[in-house]
Image (tube, helix red, strand yellow):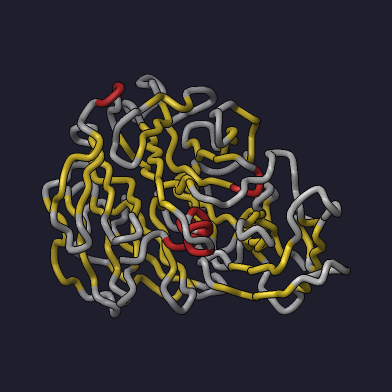
Length: 376
């Protein structure tokens, strides 16, 4: 099943580019008691088996809603409903780094879109979908109309955007340029949260009130309940084999289902470390391989944002670079470039703006990798 592909594709870059052992970490947002008077609000971290958990973030949270990793900044961002802002943290330590964006009308879901920009839903305000650069600069309002209490978004294969309204119980469709094209689903929902498409174009909707996940075909026709018996369902992520992680806010657990919607196990047991109300679940890949990791402050490509890229090399200091491979945000090979050691190796003027992974193949059989942003 296709997951939240655009955001999750960032986490799969290494696995798609380089043969290696896969290992994942699971991050869970806890809404606590839902309102100002009922924290604690937390971001938890677990291994892929739901074990070795820790409270990763507690600082500057106010009813957290979603988590997005920004690998080019080595950080993660969290949307906070009560303070109308998105806060930023060190991806390795969880230390608070500051505000990423402010002045949002109750930010809920966030995803990196096909254009490499961050899309942010608003629970309140004018309800329009906002877009930000991956450095926190507001690009503007993307949609031409608001969706009240919006809390779920995804794109179909044609680039149309879909947004769920929790209180009004519908899913709105927008064109690839943000124009409203009508309500895609307007019945059989009680309180939708997360939404996602699979490879066949079917839309799945987590229904918080009904306690299930519902399936609609590629034309928006209701096909029935896909997963049942999961109270206050919110927060979803996907393993590469199609298995699904869902937050169960009724008992404070994170459950694992197979790609056909069958219950596998309670991966993170109810109440672990005080987990009360999981409302975002994010998988992050940890690379464990023969790929040579560059030091934290070392970039071997310059610039990191632009349209023409050079390799920074010091003769004799490192194994020589033989070739480069460039992958887009969905993990697709965009270019394979032999390297002569002279001049710019990649002119990206013909590529779409957005985030890319560049893998340098070394003469010793290993590799380096670095993420860059194409911006023309």
